[in-house]
Amino acid sequence: MAKAKIGIVTVSDRASAGVYEDISGKAIIDTLNQYLTSEWEPVYEVIPDEADVISATLIKMADEQDCCLIVTTGGTGPAKRDVTPEATEAVCDRMMPGFGELMRAESLKFVPTAILSRQTAGLRGDSLIVNLPGKPKSIRECLDAVFPAIPYCIDLMEGPFLECDEAVIKPFRPKAK
Image 1: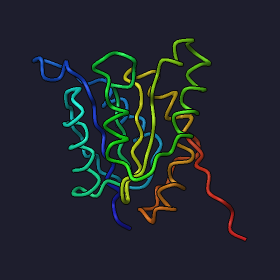
Image 2: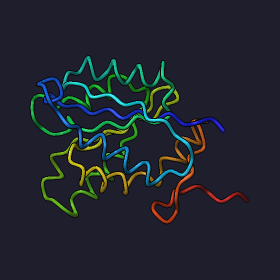
Image 3: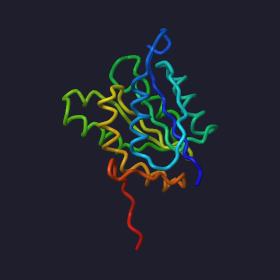
C-alpha cells in the first residue's frame, strides 16, 4: 500500500519576521498522527500571507508532490491580509462548500465569532484542500467535525486508502452491499 502524502501549510506573516514556532502546523500533524493508523508522510511548509505564495504552494503540493490531502492553517479571518480562501479558490477545479459550513457550525458551539471565519475546501486534480483556522484548539474542533468525511472523499478521488484509529475518529464509508 502506498504511503499517503499529506500537505500541511501554515500561513503566517510572523513566519518571515524571524524566530517563529509554528504551533498550528504541529497541531495538525499531532491530530493526524492520532487519527491515522495507515502510513503517511507530511509535506510541511510555513509561508507568508501572500495569495501568490499560497497558490503556488498549493499547486506544488497537489501537482508535483502528489499530496492527496492538503490542510492549511491561518489566513481565514476577515483581516485584509487573510487571503487563504481566495488563494485556495483560485487553484481549485471544484469547491466543496460543505466543509466550511460544517466547520463554522461546529465552531459556533464554542465562540460567537465563528461567523467571521472563512474556511473553505476544494478539489485540485487528485487533491482535497481544506482551510482550517489558526488556533490549535479550533483546528482540532474543526478537524474532528470534518475528518470523518475525508477518507471517503479521498477514496472517491481514487487516492490512497486512509485507515483511522476508530477509538479516536470514526471515518464514514458506505457499507458494501
